[in-house]
Length: 129
Image 1 (cartoon, rainbow, N blue to C red):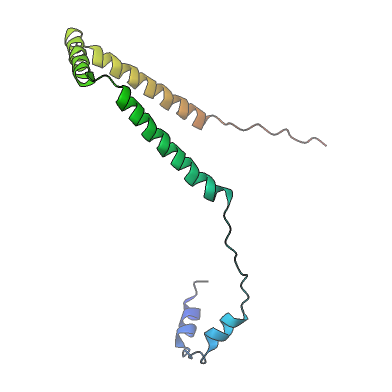
Image 2: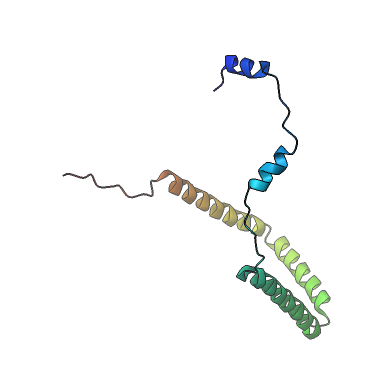
C-alpha cells in the first residue's frame, strides 16, 4: 500500500468541492435510533453505597471522638518515647525488622519469578487415531 507511484498519481488529481447541501443530505439518509434514557442498577447502587459508606465513617468518627480518653495525646507521646527507649536499648531491633521485610520481599519475588518461568498450562494429549 506504500506505493510512491500511487501517491504521486493521487496528488496530481485536482480536488473537487462537494455540492452544496451534500453533508446535510447524507446525514438525513442516516437512520439513528432514538435512545431512551434509563437508570441501571449501578446508577442507583454506587451512589447509595458511597453515601452509606460516608455516613458510617462520619458516625464512627463522632462515636470515637465522644468516647475517646481525654488524655490520649499524652499517652500517645509516652508510647512513642517508650518505643524510642526500646530502640536505644536494643539498637539492632530496626535492622531485624528490615531483615524480615527484606526476606519476605525476596521470597515473594522469587515465587513470582518461579511462577513466571514454569509453564502453568496442561500438556495436551496427542491424538492417536
